[in-house]
Length: 310
Image (tube, rainbow, N blue to C red):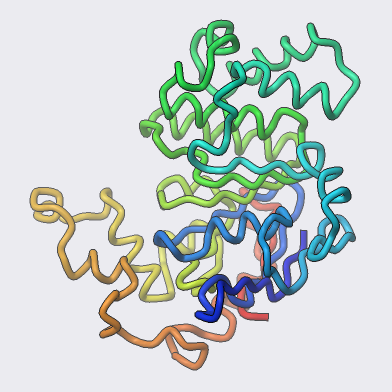
């Protein structure tokens, strides 16, 4: 997928996402991080062709998706591109968990009911759901929120799509289960060539990605390898996000909670007393990615990106 100058505006305010550009390759994992309201979920919807008012260019396997009609988009869903939405929208409360997977498999391939169930049980086990047979017959309301997120992951990967867009895939999971699920997603991406775009608030989860884009007020302020962004952030806002990770708190901060000044920095300076986010600001360069990293592939590589504003 190649994205160029992707822009979404809401009403007359101009809020939304602005001039996002990046590329994804088979087997690569891109994490998009940022505060609530930065535009992360809007990016997901726009890449799926589900966001009204999207402009720019989104080319998937040589086909332009901006302006594509609904019939053509539906041909791409599940088999080629799969969306894992966040929250209650991921699963149908009226269907048993197993039917979410088996009906997806049968709708997009010639497969018997028995074979579909066997694959569904295998996927549930792969995504760390205990007693897969019981989960298969349960309804979403009979499972915990974390279990439903793992079910949604299994559904998203069920047809071996070329691209999975995962919106908060680890929300509600304890750290041990989160890491196991992310390891499964990473293994599937690398062994099956599935590209993954993962939206998350959790920078620790983003460390499983090959590269990370930091979104603030609808635009990328930084793009680079996970090692660089988390270990040596270049933009002050990225540095505040990294510092806000609990594992990076000082002993006093762990005892007393996050300092007010840090909380305000990570909330986008709501009173407008901070530095400018305009394209001309030295803190918001024309291209947030270091040119030396543009074609870099680390040992977890396979993903390339071009950050910036078009």
